[in-house]
Image: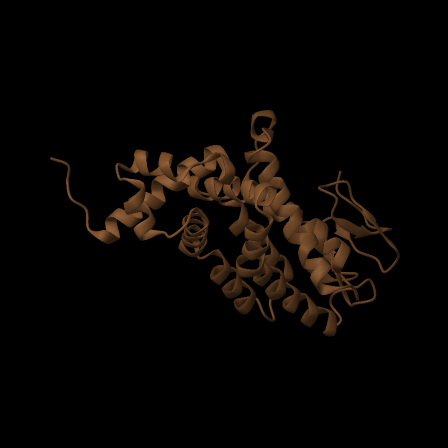
Length: 252
């Protein structure tokens, strides 16, 4: 005789089955009957736990997002990074996004289906789980603009630009076959993308500039081994696109 599950365990089982089916077939392609059959229950019992297909789908998305705790970790990174190195902050955020589990990949597929098939759920998801990322990062950027460290730009657009770089890399690697073409070390990607973004954001008239090594800030004119930063206009040193001042001597 099959093991009788508690209501809580049965609900968890239905959600686990549903996430796999929705990730394979999308919202429109999956049916509650198929989910119920694979979970070993009838539809009536499924609807006792979830009154509609949309309710089941939303609960699944909600639990997958809350279980990751990624937003809370990003807020902690921003809080702990106040007064420290911008590179460390943005590199840590990029690393957090890039370090994905199989459940994260499943959630990404679900979100693509949601965006393509169910506009209302997609908007609801953005407002509930995504907008906060942009707003918190924009708040940090706004503060750095006010302090004179960053250029005067729209903080929300800047936040979207940074997160977009990192998320797009993940999508190319995980969903569009980029990993089969070339694999990248997550630490290298996080450092490089953070450095590129900061190179475009740093206030050109501020006292600090980049030393060419993944965006670590130093005082202009300070010697760093065989690299010397002058006060003239910026250019690229050819190593991952990090800017140094023209007139800079770069070790061959």
